[in-house]
Image 1 (tube, rainbow, N blue to C red):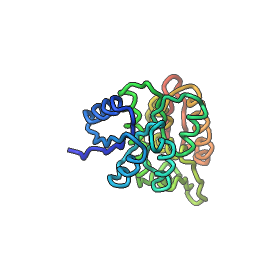
Image 2: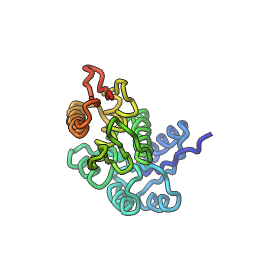
Image 3: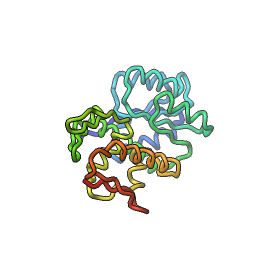
Image 4: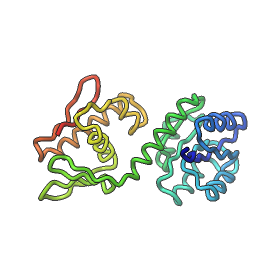
Length: 227
């Protein structure tokens, strides 16, 4: 049996904290529950969890302050904020200080669990050491580079590299649009969809030196990488 993923949950509402803890434990997560930010910082340092779920409004130390402090120690641990705040500036602040996702109260446990699993999958993807061949290109996923045979190296952005990785892994098959939006962007809304279209266009340009490679739009379904 796989070792359970350890989650640090910082939530100062006792009833909600225990509901979340029990729900996650039924999904084989190990949950460390704290009721204030100072305690959560201590538990983080002692237990080294693999994911953080932080309420924003907490006594002694709020979730944003806690996340800032933890980001100075660990740049990669996934962080989800829980909050009753709904103003755009609060959401922007959460992402700016290093949050990976933001869930507004009230929320369903199923939504929280889906977001946790998506973040863990993204984190595992980032740890892969795979170097893949695509036509005349060599794609180094860890270094986020494309090297054309007998030519120079093109640097990819983090999102371009993630998207190309999934396209290659599903080569000659349709990559479901909604699935990849939820996996990489966290939501399949209109604006994220437009953002993904832009990244697809950029990848087409960066792969254009090899005429055998095409990224096709499959209307109503997604994209298909052909090589």
